[in-house]
Amino acid sequence: MSKQHHIMLAGVKLLPDLSGAIYLPDYQTMIISDLHLEQGSSLARRGIHIPPFDTAVTLTLLETVVAEAAPKRLIFLGDSFHDSAGEDRLSEESTERLRSITTCYETLWIIGNHDPLPPEKLGGQGAAQIALGPLTLRHEPAQRLDGTVEIAGHLHPGCGLSQRGRRIYGKCFVSDETRLIMPAFGAYTGGLSIMSDAFSGLLDRKTAQAYMIGRAALHKFPMSRLS
Image (cartoon, rainbow, N blue to C red; front, side, top):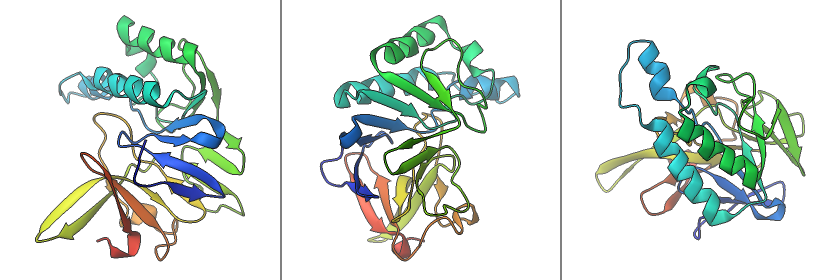
């Protein structure tokens, strides 16, 4: 977990990780969004052939970050599979790796737009959204929060910054006082600019902070400074 930055949301301390996961020490809970497992095989079915290693790479990163944090509870924030048939395309090895995780940790699968039903054979429980203390966890950010405080995924946030004559860009966490939008965890997922129309109205751009994932550290910038 990050030793440089933490995020406070509704009085809850959140520790972001370079992997894109976030850990809530008060609840001994790790949250991970947008695994998009079997994205490579999904694209292959549509004639787009890329190396089919995304699931294996994503699971290795997942195993590493979970072992480091050793949470009691693990929450997947939706789009855990790239499509509704993704679970059926898992290799036997990948299936067993996921079962090993759900056996060791209480696991909740929040459903997403890519996977509208929770997995059937991997263990854990499914939900449309859940409450964790003062926080509401769901896949897609709500257009209106109506007094709630939210952690969501779905949008795969990324951000860019021009610095010393060069431009850097990467996945990021982005948060204001009422909402955190998490980056995508999957190996083949990219980052959509938080300055794009998809984020319009979701964040207070005057107070929001972006936490860009770098190679060795998280880099914190005011959203108002980004382009």
